[in-house]
Length: 149
Image 1 (cartoon, rainbow, N blue to C red):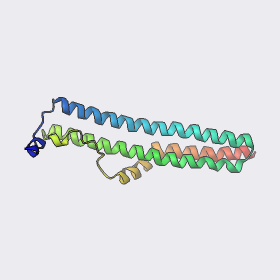
Image 2 (image 1 turned 135 degrees about the vertical axis):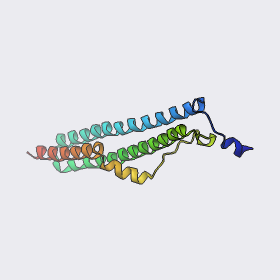
Image 3 (image 1 turned 30 degrees about the horizontal axis):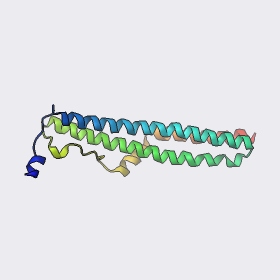
Image 4 (image 1 turned 120 degrees about the horizontal axis):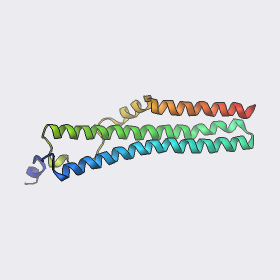
């Protein structure tokens, strides 16, 4: 009897379907917010490191600022990869709505679709990642040169 319930077709106007879509939208939004927060935290930490390095007059330590830059780059790419995976999940679910093929087993399964590794590689290639973190790295090198002067 349980398998019959899981294979039951659900109407698109069902509150369960609407709730599932809302959950997916919230998860996608959270991943985008986390990605944005990574950039903000990275700038704050790198700025603090560079201010301390400049205050101490030790330009050779300015490369320490590359450590949080690389860590936040990886974390940011991870969040963008998760966002892409959840967007795929959302799009697949919407396609099932259009095909009138939603089953009970499709509801409340919140798992990113696709290869997370491939999504991360694509995220690293996006301008929002390499453009931001490359310019931040260049800023670190320029700051080192300014401290030396």
